[in-house]
Length: 211
Image 1 (tube, rainbow, N blue to C red):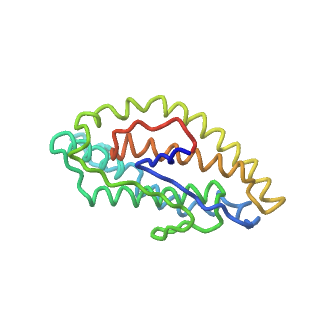
Image 2 (cartoon, rainbow, N blue to C red):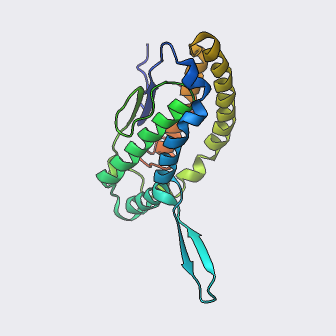
Image 3 (cartoon, rainbow, N blue to C red):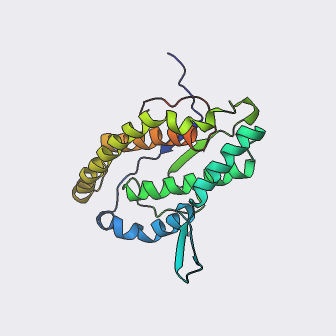
């Protein structure tokens, strides 16, 4: 038997036992506070100023995630360096986002923590920047377009699977294992694309695979 392929980004989520019907029923409402926190961390930033005509003008920035992507891209292209603390921050933000997504998609009853791993195990290898192709970061986001299309379709299917799982949880208290594995697989696929196209930690093109 061939050895399993070890990817630069790896995602595993523990399969839950009995799930709480009440919190599952109101999951979208329960998730609102933590979604606000995540949005403040990763969403676009904005500012206002008054122009010469006395009109208030608003401007928006790209947010922390977009800023880190742009800064990392420039560092790899011009210096072939990847500051470790940038990587650590982006990884922890990705882990937090994963915990929020896991909770929202009913894969766990445990409210997302800002620090603890909980049931979501997201690991990404810190890259040797000198070994990366310094020009690929300029086009990785473009090369990943086929993945964006596939993930759009898969995400719609994952949402439908979550609706089916929601009804199953309400009646049985359990998340059907086949649906659970599918939704986790979509998350695993998305994680590899994120690590390749936006975290920029690997030059290995992501596989079209849920495993």
